[in-house]
Length: 463
Image (cartoon, rainbow, N blue to C red):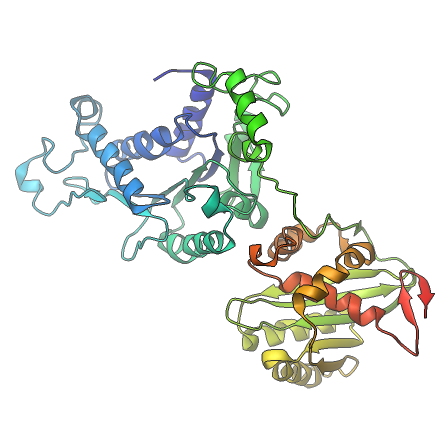
């Protein structure tokens, strides 16, 4: 082991995780800096040496890679050096008593600690953990390359697997470690950062008293570009591991592909090229001159689509102020109440509901709920959207950005909605979901539609 300042900081983080001082840890490390050796080989061996009753799972992008990591853990644990440090932890066929080995398993992907209830299971991305209790989950590079990370389908499958498989095997005392090289702004780290409580670690004192539901995040840049911190006190332009990756070598990589370098080596996969929206202006409080409150709802067309219902206020300045959003992939019958309650809370006078693919039935159900609650102020109008979605969204994109205003905290309040809108790309096939942009486009279309031969446009009237 070459003990550079980076490696000392990295293993100090892993030690804090192993001791339970940090329950949820995110570490972004450039490629070829010893990330997997520490997190997916030495850490599991160390954890099981401290407590052979722990159930540890290691996941990577492929079943084969996960198996190789599992084999490396076994090689460490079968060594004489390991047994001298942790005599209470042993593997089948590695010097443990034969009588205790009868029920112990030891395969490439899975093994038990002899005479204890713990062990390790190595799985590929989307692999099954059925029937396994997981005390420590280690996710190490769930994307093979840029081709996979740039695929909305792959990213969505990783996110679904993480929530539907991994999270269902955890318990209150479980620990999670996500250690990755960044490929895309919407990878697992990006999703977690947008949807859960994450604090950036800059001082070691922050490790004390971290809430169990909070992720601690550290990003090590290959070339130092951010201000120095206690964890990473390097000067600007200094390489992370100069003995392996010199500044000159890294600068060559950056000049060859700046965008890829920012993602892989700097941990900043912010890909702005090709985005449809360049950001939205925000407001702290609604202006005094609110003319009307309304709603636009785009119901989910298929099982993969999302219902997007947006309440907004029309200002006398001609701007549309978003006040609340329901954005979900749950079936219509589960969202009727949520939309009805939102309409009532926001005092919507009108609500336009696309009647395509079951939208008419959804609108009637929402209207019925409102009437049953005694609310007769909101007029629901169902209509058939006959326009081409792609053409509509692209045509009105600039107008949407110019006229729509978001609350200051909209990214925190509606993280999935914000991610799908801000990450929406002009090439439609590159997008996993278009429901948010579709609903925002619908608002602009509805408000700027000819009324009495006139179109109201940003505070000006045009025929």
